[in-house]
Length: 186
Image: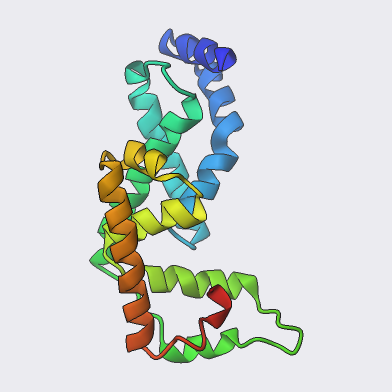
């Protein structure tokens, strides 16, 4: 953490090489987070850049009270959420026949990349706040306390949103008659 603080101070003082070191150190973790928001590599790269540009412009507001990566992830969460807001205007719809490609084989295996893609599209049918809370809890493995910190919601609100979002996801699966296709997710 001390190295990060030294790089941050150097960057604020005009050392661009110091910020490059921070980007190199955290780029993989931020890219992994942004992949939760989009399955398009080009969009993901753009979102990662948006996170680091936003962080650079806000660097003076970093107080150093927690790890720099946590601060970056909060910026990333907000960036991803804004991206979903933009995407809602032009939401893509997955055709039901695409779910047929996810059948289990004899060995009880499935194409995990295709399964992730389908799950991503299924999540896209949820309201943004529901997508966000489920993504952070189940894919980023954040605690309710961490989700509250990243979103600004209370822990009680996070728990309530998780419960409601899970019910909505189940209702979507039932409405689309997808329960048996999604058995492998339980």
